[in-house]
Length: 121
Image (cartoon, rainbow, N blue to C red; front, side, top):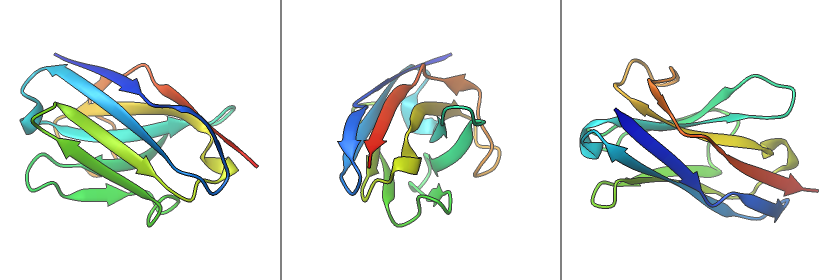
């Protein structure tokens, strides 16, 4: 079992930056793949970014590539999503996701409850 708790969401103006975090507990953090998904109002949940435990390799959705950076601190059991050049269309609830790797964009077994990011125009 893995428990995930997101934090750091909030309101930011377009063009601004925000960093959200996800603290994990339970299973050995350093050996699980971590990711972020988001769900905008009235839309389906969509993939944002993934970071592997082995080598820290990352993968991003085209919509955030070059603006968002996913990273992890295994010593703190925490994964981060640094979001720069934010756009109103980035407004969503961001969910932390974790588990065994099954493909770069595939959701894994464990989910956090989400943190709301609102980007004003």
